[in-house]
Length: 173
Image 1 (cartoon, rainbow, N blue to C red):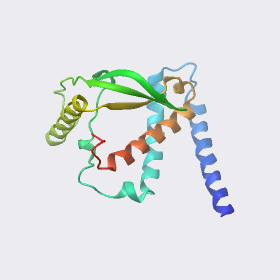
Image 2 (cartoon, rainbow, N blue to C red):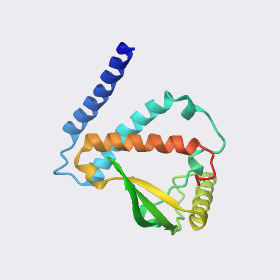
Image 3 (cartoon, one colour):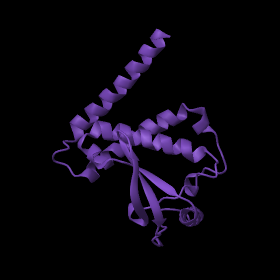
């Protein structure tokens, strides 16, 4: 058991080291805008989350209710944000008092069926917001000052979202 625990630590520190090295080589947070930090982190997060997901049997299961096109994607400016509900080390949880959908007729990047599924999922979520309380969890803005922490926090949040999207529960819209 001790060797297994040691192996997990070395893998974690190896991951931290490689992310730190990547950001030291490609970013200087004092001289780059947040958007650039997010773009650079996205590739690392995607690789990390794909690796973690492939090792989690629950996330590998195929379900008919959890397709990428049925998970509604919203712009931040479509959310009517209420009061702060809570906060942790990396994230804040805010009350969502409403959703104001903007029409998006640009479906050139998606197929017509996928676009229609996405629009239906967005409408369903907007209706859900009228009937029951919703909350949004988001990363703290200050994390962009620390790219390695930002990247790991993003990966954790994406992995958490994947787990939640697999649950079929009336409390999850």
